[in-house]
Length: 247
Image (cartoon, rainbow, N blue to C red; front, side, top):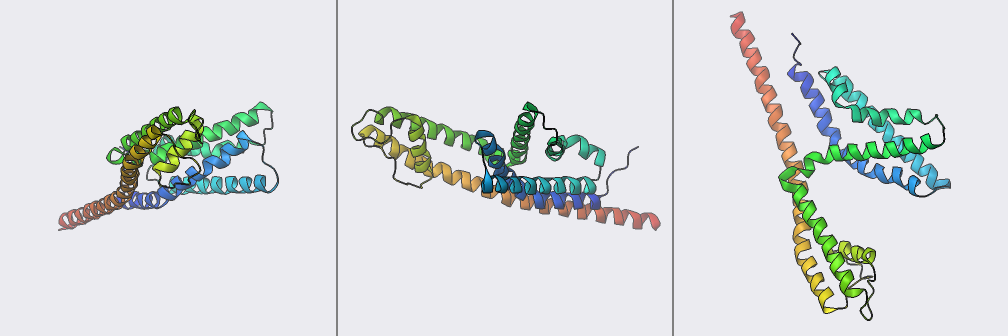
């Protein structure tokens, strides 16, 4: 019969995981461009050095996180089996010395894929919190549809400055986020009507996204407190049971 992990051991692991999960999610999101940009275009000099420094620093932090979690894990074998993606992030850079033509590019693509998957895994609880994924989907559909409608209305209009879908998409994103650079704007009545629709609905969607993310972190803190209280109650029950058995 396998030995159950003690509540104290599990508590130490959970405390560390809760403390680092959000910062590591942010690092994952920031890490992705550092990995993708050198694949899309050649970088040299200071830029290449900066990218390499950031890459190694973030990789070192991920390695440290993995090793600490492995050490704190109540069941290390189970942790190893259920965190293979984390292990891949740590292990793939060790194959860099194998400078074998296409293999180098394949390894870089593999790293990008692994880090993207890790980012999605870490963000999964946020994306599924209070229908957040549906709000994101609605916001994305609204932006793309409005960009398409404005492009259709503006591309052949006299004095228009939105001539293709890329410019329309840029305008839609700037508008829905209320940044409003003013470099792209509709000049036709139909395009301006679409802009009004995007402004009115976009403010609500962006506000909902922000509120959902904020409520997620508040709920996470509440859940962590509840779990800690449950462990304290479990320990107290064990102590009472030991006292009764001794009596």
